[in-house]
Length: 153
Image 1 (cartoon, helix red, strand yellow):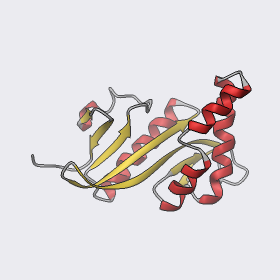
Image 2 (cartoon, rainbow, N blue to C red):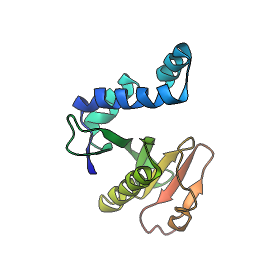
Image 3 (tube, rainbow, N blue to C red):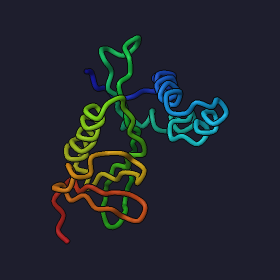
């Protein structure tokens, strides 16, 4: 597995990856199309997230012709609830739980390395909440937060 920063040239890989997953989940063509219109991975969202440099993907080998195994879309979020820097993880998708866990762990380590105070996750994100309880996981009304630095309150 090879994890790299996503770039704008990876948009087609993500769209194909997600449409393949939708094909497995939704039988009806029309329903699939409606689901794609509302998805966090639609083209305009990817055009926003990918140039920022905070979104990562796991590839089977070197990207290009290598299959995409999973990815996340993220961006910095500044001055929220008294914290200077947070990383907002909007979307996390993978073909397996192991890859999902690796990517979420990468997001956490990235926050620690870059001195962000917390990792924010959307409520609809599917991840192993039990694993993250020891990392000060808190459910907020509209997101989860995981503290990534020592904070005195």
